[in-house]
Structure formats: C-alpha cells, structure tokens
Image 1 (cartoon, rainbow, N blue to C red):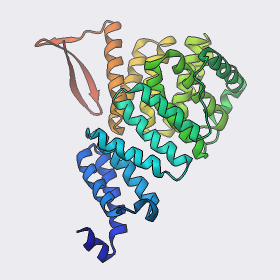
Image 2 (image 1 turned 45 degrees about the vertical axis):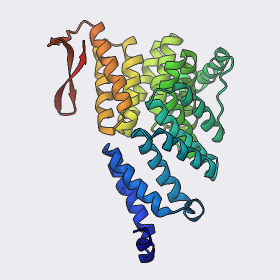
Image 3 (image 1 turned 90 degrees about the horizontal axis):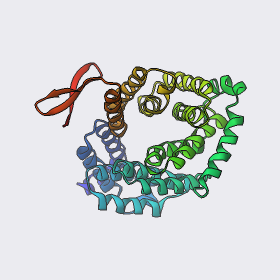
Image 4 (image 1 turned 120 degrees about the vertical axis):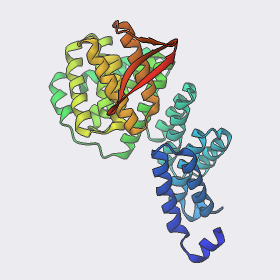
Length: 334
C-alpha cells in the first residue's frame, strides 16, 4: 500500500490529511483511533523522514507519542521521545518536545519528572529557575513584583498589548504546567513559579496565560503578603482577561486557581464554588480532565466544609453537579 501511494504521488497530501484527521480524533478523546491515524502518517513519512520532511515528521511524531503514552504504551512513547530529542533542530523544538513530555508526566503524577523537564525546557528558551536557597529567590521575585505590580501600573497591566514573542509564551506555558506539580511538591517552589508567571506577564504583556498568572499572583499578594485590597483588584483583572479571551482551556486553570486559593479570602464560600463549577465546565468542554478532577475534589471538600449535605444512597456518598446543560450524579464510594 505504501508503495502504491508513493507511486501515485499523493503521499505528502495524505500525510497532512492523516494529521488533521488524527487531531480531530484526539480532540474528541478517541485516542486509540488517533494513534492509528498518526501511525499511518509516520509509516508514510518513511525512514528518512527527519531529513526529507522535518516539520511534518516532528508534528506527527509529537502527536503519535502523546497518544501512545495516553493509551498505555509507555516504553514505545519513551523511545519516540528519545528519538525526537536526538533529531530536534533547535532549542525551541527541544523545549516543545520536553513540554509535551511534562504534560504526560503530570497526568501520571510524576511530579519530579515534570519539574526536571520544565527546568530543562525553560533553559532552552533562555529562562532559568534557581531552586537553591528558595526563600532568597522568592524574595527577589517579590521585590521585582512590587515594582511591576505597583498600584499605578494595574490599569496599564489590564490594558497591556498581547504578547507576540513565541519564546515568552512558550515559557509561560511551561511554567503553567509546572504549577500543579510545584504545589504538590513544595510550597516554596509553588510560590516561586506563581511569582514568575505573574512577573513575566506584567513585564511582557498579556497572553492566554496572563489570567492564571494574575490570579495566582493575587494569592501571593493576599495570603502571603497580606495586601488583600490589591489582591482583589488583581483578581478582577484576571477575571476580566479570562472573559475577554474566552478560552475554555486556559479558563479552566484560571477559575480553578481563583476558586481554590483566592476568592474565599474576601468573598463567601459560595462564590468559590461558583468559580470551581466554571472551572469544571471549561475543563469538560476543552478536554482538560486533569483539572476537572482537581475541581471536583475541591468542590467536594468545600461543600463538606460549608455544611452542605452529601446525599447518602445505597452505601454511597454523592453530590449533584451540572455538566454543561445536563445534571449528572457524580458518586464516590463511601
């Protein structure tokens, strides 16, 4: 079949079509089907793919490797990651490959690996994180933030231009992936990562990552530095930008951060629950099931702490949660 396709001269077009079809299958969570489509694309690329068609090779292999990992083919995925790292043409491609590997390790709970890959990927982009003497590094970022987030600049931050530097947006994405792992690994690392996201956003301009950066920075302003008034203003800027960008994938993490860490300092717990519900809704629509799980956990905990009854049926605790337009029952074993 491969020889026939090559003879007919339609191989290059078919590779592109297979990539598009694979992406559609992947976005609909049909990972096994996507794996087959990307696998066919890889087969058509042939053994000399890295020298003959580097761009399509990297695109196909990145998606194929991710689907293989999700489907449980860990050794095959690991081998492909090593292959991509060996053939990467430059620092930005190395950063992209390691960023993908970070995401997959975050799904399997390998926090150490997520953080190690994140530090490596950031170095490829020219950004460094010093994990030695963390209190000193945090103090430096706080002092930097005091200048960037001074009251006279808040309105300018809200209306800042959109970042066009791909290197900066890639760094912000990598830092955002690191946030959850840092929170589970070490509270000081979490604070440092959050401060860096906020400071980079305030320095270079707004992006899809800025709402999360400002939401997380408002946590530091309030809970760590005690400036709840400025923290509330920054939270509002974060929410305004999240609504302006109207992107479910990035809205998931932003609303989760506000609902879990920020809103309850100055607002009733019911408002926190509303933000967590928005995070869940955005996560379902965008396919960010990792943060959907985080949101459900926090919603359950908050409902319990605020005294909302947990319905008991047939030996199971359950709570009602709307998923988009429908109401479905989510149960956990008692």
